[in-house]
Image 1 (cartoon, rainbow, N blue to C red):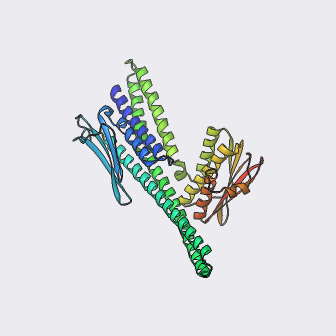
Image 2: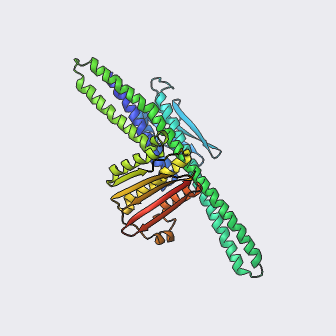
Image 3: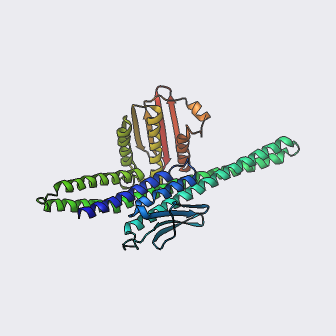
Length: 393
């Protein structure tokens, strides 16, 4: 019983580890996609029941990556995904025959695992190709502007016609910018929903299963108190507690359920406590007491914006104290984030807007603009910074 329990627990830990490491790999936007897919393939064998005879393969468009020992065998488990009109697959095979389980030699949990991995890859490739489309559209627009500007300089006789053309080009640019802003917001919301679904699966299935296992092991300890297994059972319970805590932490890291269950204000209070524990500065959350039900997409955007501002206070402002003030008025909802950090020159920030150092603030501004909201920031060197997020009802 003890060996079987430890074995099953070890398998679940391997599966959780594979999901967590895959999620971390797919979140790295700085690496080449080919390298990311190769790393994911290398992770897969260790997550299955017999890693020493396990091979894996991922196929999608130009990507066809497999472990060095990959062979087509009768003992294969696969999952497919589709994005951009093209289909891909994740395959895991055993190189030797093994005892029958829920699906050939594969466990039912391994089916859930490979389906989750396929969905994560689908989301990753969808996001990857969307980014490529955005960059291509942006490059095309810049090229069009350069060509039209050169035409204006070369021909005075066609000045009026070129002015009209420039006006049309500007309208097109504005339309593309709005489309890009909308697409970025939709991708962000889609990512939040996918993360929420993965976190829910971790909590509802793996987390509850572990809690049930712990309950049964505790019952077994009570029944076997005179059998000499106390130390072994305590060791199992300690390992179970660590695994349950890791599962809970991973669930909150992927998508904090408090945002969806208790609302934005409670989620911000949880976020404040998390930053206090992680970065060592004081975060106070205050509210005027009024409340209103915000749309889910608005809550997600505001939560991410507050997270970005607190991260700036931790990494750049070197603040010792941050105050988050939540105010619900008659026509709008406002959040103010003020810190006592070193501050900065806002005029200089405007001059370098969009660079890597200010991309977080640029992202906050664009997200609020999509919601017809506003973002204002004021700062004085060595005096601190105050940022205001406001959205209409």
